[in-house]
Length: 137
Image 1: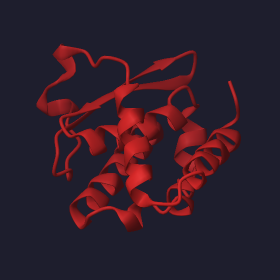
Image 2: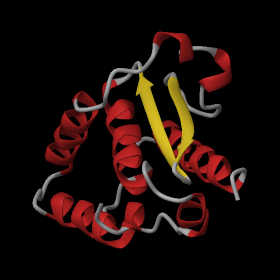
Image 3: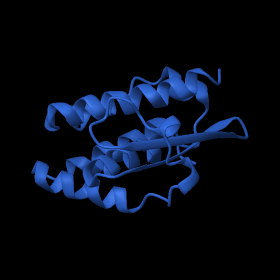
């Protein structure tokens, strides 16, 4: 598996290929379509991320000392955002995740190019992932 830094750099480079934010949204939608199916029994209140306008479910387990995330959303762009986060952080150690600054999100301009409610949702997704990691350290 590539390093966390390499994965984040790959995402930055992929987003840099697109000049317009409309194209970047299309890319996010494509990422969302690549999410593995989310288990129906985890579509409950305890897995909902609070603070998101759309419904976003996040589940995780520890495998070989690494956090493995699964996620879904009922909104296509939000599903792409959580898919992006899962692709970067799933399979990482709790310490790697907890100590990361998630700065690549600023590099790609994601938060600045989302509506205020989606930007708040992004913050909630990041906090939930960081909290899941911190609880395992």
